[in-house]
Length: 417
Image 1 (cartoon, rainbow, N blue to C red):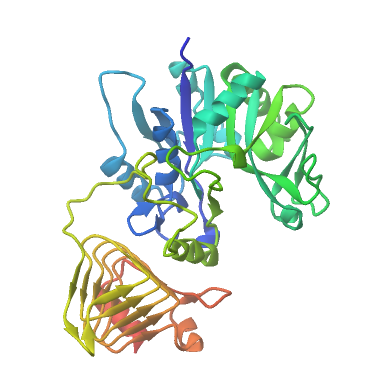
Image 2 (image 1 turned 30 degrees about the vertical axis):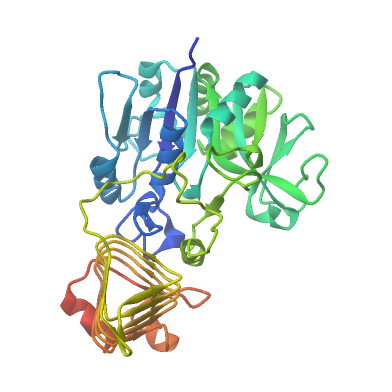
């Protein structure tokens, strides 16, 4: 019997710690890595794992996410089990409220599970940058005959207070949960690390339905998997942790460490993007056996023009995406998204430049994130005087300047005077 798997992606998070990049978009729709969106990672993991029946549950500021899904991810065929369908909040609860928690989001859409009639349901978040062969996790789940399997990331014990920690027996059976406790139990046989919950779950369908129905009737519940449903299942259900470090991606080098990053803050987002510039980055975007899929745009290739000593179009240790033109400007240690223009004499260093940004002549950008459609006037400087930058822009704890996008050229020009 071939196992029927339904994928559900939770893509409704506000992403408040990523402000101002999430001012006008949901966190899963935030651009990453030159041409992608954060949601592309979980969807690519599902498709590459052979899971083609996927619902994407949206909620806050979902327009940009819905547009991205419609342009690059929705597909249909002759088989009813091949679909990627975005599902806006249906407000099916008795009080017609927004989703109250991760479990409530699934409960309000339980009709979709009943219609699909899967053997297992894979519930994954859309907030992280990671590569995962989900088939391996499902095989582990079936081998253990589990009611639920939770993806677990081994992290250093000193970080236990930052995560929801899973306590396990030596065979992987889950025996407890510890929310952000510095003294949380370590991994059996490894006193230096703990299992952090990745928020990715594989459920046996009947167990999921039963637990959701019970939780929905509990007036004291916050209707969240991590806080309510999963802790209540300890001792009642067969629960196992899946060690993410055992996950193997086809096409990756032997011994490669599985990649997972939380890009929940501006500093983490900036660092994860710039990590891609490495000669051999931990996140391999060039593996043809595990492609990272996204919207296919009809863009022309990137172009570099002029080769004079003080007017050279060049990019060093950088990612430069399609439709970019470096017209006598220099880029170092940076990531340029689609359609960026860097004009003569301009210098961009250690920065993340999103779609359709125009950087004027002789402008200087350093340690900054420029959101889409920003127009930087000639001779402007960003990242050189943080006190001045704070008067017009958001500046992170580590000094990363974020310039908001989607303004008119006239509006932006006044910010750099």
